[in-house]
Image (cartoon, rainbow, N blue to C red):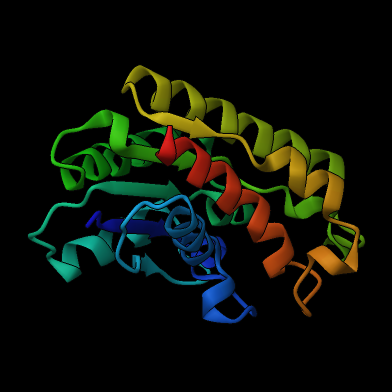
Length: 196
């Protein structure tokens, strides 16, 4: 039986969607359908968390066990609060190394998902959408480089959020967070990567 730890923020816990519809739970269901025995995900994620807040929560949980797979999706709140990419790189690197530790040192068992672009959503009405996109691209470029240098998997989901971010079917009621339909796309990409 595989075990799964999901680390992140609102995009991991699935703000405003039923718990079963967040991407970690949907990925587990997809893996079950592929005949892979995996337990329900252990999720450490809260809406609004930045990299340092996630790191503090991990320390507080004081997890001793290791996991078969670990996913990490963090950084949108750093961007939202106007923090620098350099600061993100430093704190993201520490979180990635922590994730590798949770995966018992197996870098190929760690899966980083790119940061969605909230700037295309109705919530961002009146904000500088081009600047948001540019900043998220910079964050993602940094995360991808660090992830690859640590020999972990990087899963691109940002483009999907840009394509679907104006479609109400792919959004939660707040017009900001994804719906279960969007999370299904991420879950499929994660499940495929894990199965491979």
